[in-house]
Length: 134
Image (cartoon, rainbow, N blue to C red):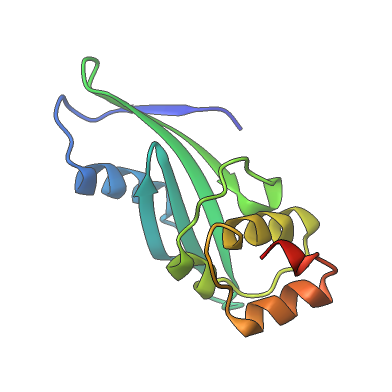
């Protein structure tokens, strides 16, 4: 999927950027549980209201204040996004998933922290990940 650009006005605060990105996740049977912004990237946790599964989305974003436009590119964790700096809070919200790309993405995000909680270590060991680098 490509980039989407929307007119936003010529002055956006961080909260307004977060709100504009959040609008992309409104829909039936989906709840936005968490979103964080980090250096042109947003990390979001979405819950399927029917299955209660929580998955991650990575949103690349660019704000052009001269044009008054916000451009975004949304990727699900199953696409194996390159950006892998999700917060610990988001990672703890995610439910187990049977997808190699998503599990690799989650593992790489966890490697950014000094300590991985034991329940997540066990999860990744069961998936065959090498934990010696942690």
